[in-house]
Structure formats: C-alpha cells, structure tokens
Image (cartoon, rainbow, N blue to C red; front, side, top):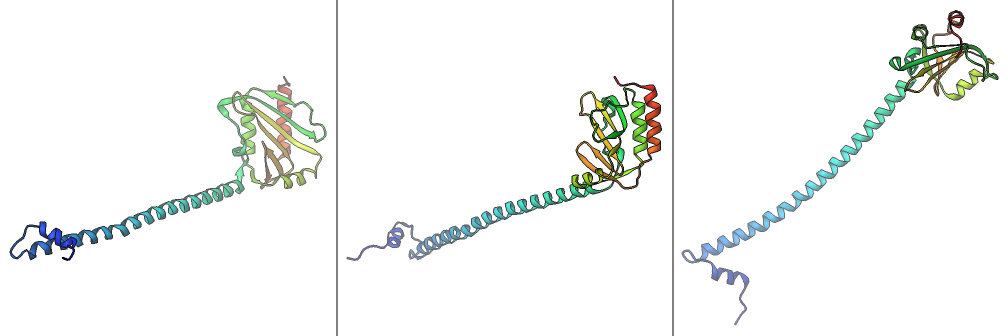
Length: 209
C-alpha cells in the first residue's frame, strides 16, 4: 500500500464537480497563484527599502550643499566692501553716551578721552561723515603691519548703550578696528581736517565726566 500524497488528501476533501478534475485543477491553480503573489511582494519591499535609503542620502547631500553655499555666501559678504557706518554696531534707540579722542600715542593707552556727551546729535553727525567711506575686511596680521607704520592713532570713539555692548572704533591711517574686526579704507584717506574740527568744537562744549 503506497503512502498518500498531500495533494491526494486535499483532493479527497474537495467537493467534486463533474469528474472531480475541475475542483482539483482549481485548487492547484489558486495555490500556485498565492505562491507567485508572495514571491512578487519580496522585491517590492526590498525596492521600498532602497528608495528610503536613497531619499536619506539625497537629503544628506542637499544639506551638505546648502551648508557649503551658506558658508560661501557668508565669506563673500564678509569680504565685500561695506559703508563705514553700516559696520559700527550703533543702537540708536539704546544710546546712552558718546566719547571721543584723537591723536593718541600707542604707548599712552590710559589717556582720558577728550570729551563725553549724552547728546545723540554728535554721534549722528559723525556717522553721517563716516558713511561716505567704504571699508574692506583684512586680516589681523595685515592690520598690525599697517599699524606699526605710524606711532599715533588718529582717532577713536566709544558708543555706550543702555543694554547692548559698547561700540568701540579705532582709526589709524587707512586701517580701522571695529570691535574685534579689522578693515582698510578703500576710498581713503579719511579727511582728518574734518575730524579735528569736529573734535575741537565738541571739546569746548563738553568735558569728561
């Protein structure tokens, strides 16, 4: 007596149509179709995984490119010519006082300022004068080389604010130091005659506090 095959057992349980052949054929066809359907799904899921990986890679590449573009534009912006007054961190509504001095020896860093004023008219007048000059950023090394050529700083001023940090500006020849950044005057030299007249008229009006 031979062993029954699985197909024979299933066939015996199936309702027979005429001759029983149709039912068996239908069962085998549906079973094979299910197997094929399952096998077809596997590549689909694999492809979806690949798509997700490709999307992540695409986002990473886009992020890197955006960062490079941002750094490049920032570098270009830093190195482009700017108006003198635009680079001074002057907070008009937060203004408290303004102090000025000129012809400062580099050895005499403790000398008092020439005058101090809480009137904004003076700093606004100076800002309008400086707006005609354009500055370009330079390195600290270049600034120090230019600085050593002349032992006297032409002028400097301080803008004190109620809440914001003090704005400090040093000018010597064709180089400028603004709160940790160094520049050269592109369309200089600065009119020192105007600066001396500005200092003299305000020194007579104001005295250091």
